[in-house]
Length: 282
Ligand code: PDD
Image (cartoon, rainbow, N blue to C red; front, side, top):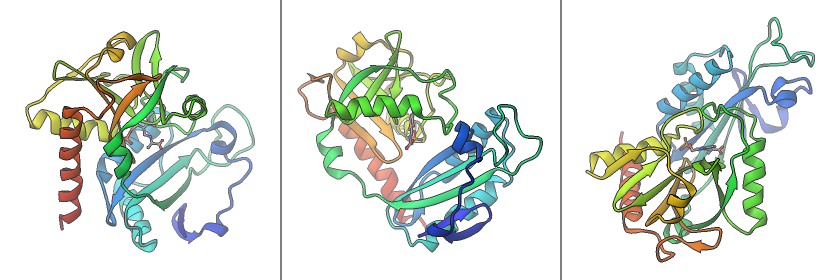
């Protein structure tokens, strides 16, 4: 496997992370996960834009331009002959003796690799069971930071309960999932948390809203409560690797009739069309 490390493409076994890397010691860095369909990066520019925004929010000066990053990532996909999967990339603030303040001068450390991951067809057709959990994350969830402990603990809580995901809420306001955005549908209205510092503005979220709007669905970006969620007609989560994923039960309570909802399935089809037409685009 070829890995992008700083400006070079090297073998996995030749990557050596320093023990004083601030990503390793403080989670001081940012990352992205980009979907790749048939060797082509999906919405790469949006991901790079978000990466640059995340870096800027943590006052991290990236050593590469967006164009350079895009070119390197496309080369990484080619070198690894990736079909359908994803790219993981991260920048840390760099290597320096452990001290909370920013180092005087250090070079950010870039690592990126790819992984095969098929479209989860069965799960998309059947939907997932989830739990509800208190949102214990920090207050800048809009930044795609390497600090994922809140998400990791919530996700693990879901897995321990034998479920696929955790829907998070802060003081009864539903924010998102541990690694996806969340939508509810009530009386044909598609509702999701607005873009604030409390959620990550997911690229899949944006594509879904874009498609829903274009096809005449009623879309409302507003806060909603756990009670509203539990009374929803349909619920679905969105994310790079899970696309538009139906949620069929929450804390063992069925959503609707415990089958993927009609509008959710329509949105899934629109998303699949987008991803397929993108695949064949030259
Ligand atoms: N997670 N919200 C959170 C907290 C996320 O971590 C993610 C993505 C999303 C969905 O964003 P997008 O549609 O751009 O993937 C929402 C990635 C995939 C991860 O951490 O693995």
